[in-house]
Length: 334
Image (cartoon, rainbow, N blue to C red):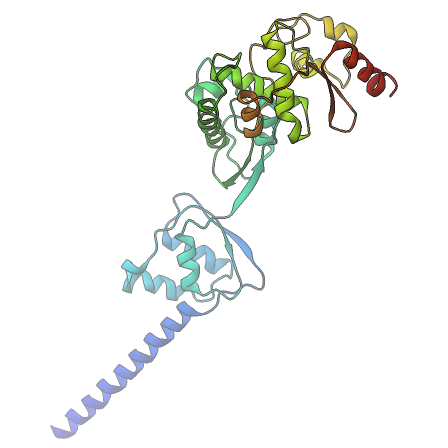
């Protein structure tokens, strides 16, 4: 019996050593670097489970020992991450464990989408339609349908979307970008309106939004915004027409081909401020915060006219005679 016990003891020890060695080998396979020579994108599809992802990673040769990760699901199910759909950037040298942790994190690959100040809502929609990897839910929708989906049924869309750089990941929808931009503009307009000058000839935040869109479209020089706002404000106060070319262009719509004629200036569209009194009925572009602030805090002064110098800036005048001289200098001579 003594010899049998010794043999059994040796076998038990050997089995333990083999088991321990196997366990250590299994752990080493989990910690081994993934098989990549350069960074690569991997997408976790919506609804994909752990075993499907492990199989795909093994088939693609990214992990060399898929069996080790299947065994992990059996031995340590509590250690498995909850995989999140999206694209992830895999880097050479990361371990299999680190890979799994990444796929369960919020560190998805994102892409920038920039809406420039002064763009129209139509231009914004064209950019969204062309954005790669964005879920295009609103493609083919009318503007009215888009606003209805955003909970703003019957609201004109122009001006209501804040121009900025937004980031999105694959699978995010264009509707979500629009919702972010809409809520951002609403909150920014509320903040700016609360800081408005007391004696403005503007009665509502929406009128400030319209005014800001005119300011945004009139100048490419940020430092000029408050003075342009001052000109528009003084003209409103004196009952003068605003006579700003961007409103003519907006009223022409797709007919505009780069030039404005005298006939265009006389055309009675709802937006032509050479013809209508006061502000146009809606904004004509997407204004940024600086234009909004200028609209409610215009620069004081006496200027009532301005004309483009041709370099992105303007010459400001107090009288019509000064203005006509400036037009001769900067426009007709050119």
